[in-house]
Length: 330
Ligand code: SD4
Image 1: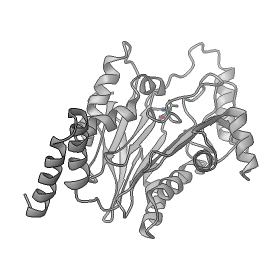
Image 2: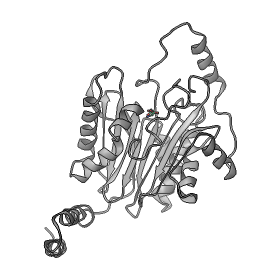
Image 3: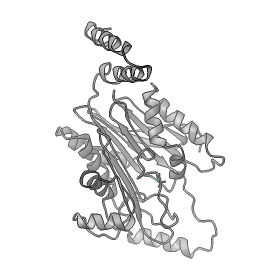
Image 4: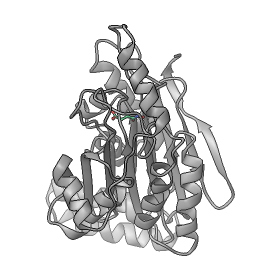
């Protein structure tokens, strides 16, 4: 151990003797997260291969010494505005009534967070979530209220159902099949994105059009702080993708961050959260959930219930896709 670190640690140790056992353990956590870790250089991690483009956009911000918060917002806006993407923002698949309804949330390095759920006709829900975070005393606005707030703040009304998705929905509705599509690894692809900036601060964003052809009014995990996304700047951040109902049940992203706090690597924390998903659901058929995580040291990881989940990782040397480890073959 370097002498300077040793002196810092012994000073903390001496102070800790004087406090209660509970405070003592908190001081212990701070030692491991703040004093022992070199601050990570900028890094971005995001879900699925639309993450590559989002990472590039987010990197432009970090590269100009911008904040992780600006980076995550700018990054996922790219995905929201990408018409070819069927599971986020514009061009996302609609619900059972043909309406595109969006869920999104954002969280910074100071526990500030903002969220929208069941939002319609706004192309970039993540920016509405940020406005709620920064300009209201609330965390979440939903439905018509979120829409009215967005319009008041200058966002433009936009039809998000494009000809292709309208056609797909009409075809599905006119088919005689009683069996409507289930959420599985083919019909969902939320983007969750975490970034560390030059100062070592972490922020995250998560945005989706949710479960294709869901019941009108259904809200998933993606706008729920602690489920779809969680950031604790002392420890790290996590995002979820997949069947939101299963993620909500175990407060997925918060669970991953808390597991990292206990000392687990990002990869192992994601794996343990996936094991909890498996334990808490009797029927695992088609139940895909994946987590990504990034800690304060810049270590990252991911894990999913089934094979097929991948994520995009960007640092100064590359932007690449990585296959997540998983529990079961799809
Ligand atoms: C949801 N978790 O609405 C979202 C969907 C998703 O990858 O993640 N897709 O349940």
